[in-house]
Amino acid sequence: LGPVPTPAVAYLTRAQRADLGIVISASHNPFADNGIKFFSGAGTKLPDQWEQDVEAALDEAPQWADSSHLGRARRLDDAAGRYIEFCKSTFSHWLSLRGLKLVVDAANGAAYQIAPKVFHELGAEVIAIGCTPDGLNINDGVGATHPQKLIAAVLAHGADYGIALDGDADRLQMVDRTGRLFNGDELLYLLAADRLAHLRAKGTQRGPELDGVVGTLMTNMAVELALKRLGYEFVRAKVGDRYVLEELLARGWTLGGEGSGHLLALDRHSTGDGLVSALQVLRACVASGQTLAELLADVTLFPQTLINVRLPAGQDWRAAPELPAVTRAVEAELADSGRVLIRPSGTEPVVRVMVEARDGAQAEACAHRLADALRGPQ
Image (cartoon, rainbow, N blue to C red; front, side, top):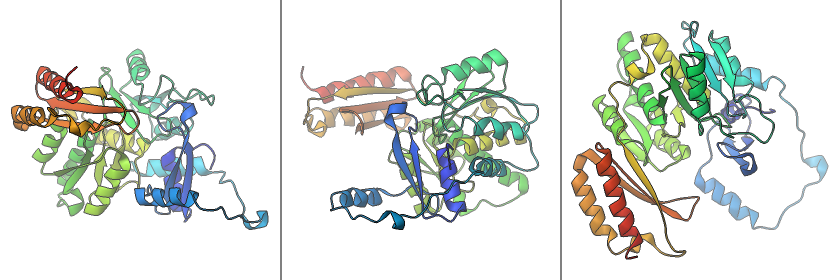
């Protein structure tokens, strides 16, 4: 397919009736951390068990095939154009982005040519940044993981919105004309609220696919409470968009996501897609005549304190003698106005202690109490 966003591979795998989609991608990481992502023939990420089966097969003796039996490769020359049209098809055909000035930051990644064209062809005036990849500068100070340049560009150009993707364009962060940054948790709520507003405007009943929303263990509690006020059930999955997808498919729901900007709208795409998500957010703004801030006026994120506790190698964090009692005391203090999450990092030798509460000072104090209990006597 050539250089295209990860969600484009998911879409084209399905559209081409292929058996497997394969992406070489740095995702949201520096260029040296390239990895491989796989998609099923349905355009979905593959489950943990499949990955474990592959790892087990790698320990088996290799089986070699003659070159003549390896098949042939061919280039799909119009891959980018097909994906651009797919993205545009997810935006209401009776609406346009005319009159909007957008700054689009593609993180010097795979959407560097595609993202500006999608928004321009829908009528927006586009200022592109992070669209000059050199093979080494992906996610380097730009994109969804480094939104400071986007904020500065939105303010400098007097743009209406800024759109930040990550290197493979499956994450989204957005900025409004005041420079306010909106994360994935807030945008997930907006998508859920907009779906209901759209149904009300059409006089249509809410279907079972909108019974609930899936977040993760890290989703801000304020968003959970706001979604419940709208009548949604809210379920937390493990951190990672594949686990959000698994919960959505198991429950027959449509919407899910995480604060990093992985957003899933299964009525639009089979996987998280930063461009499609941005178009859904902009559709809500255009259709309602309201700004992002106005649409999110009912949601004020709870302050969160996150402390990384480094423990000696081999030490079981669950065995910290004071931790159970301190955890119970903190949870009793927070009651229904906050929550505690303690989990080991999947990539670093640390245990992450997260406390969120309506009161930021309370969250910080409680997090330090838990961290001290984890460390034990010094």
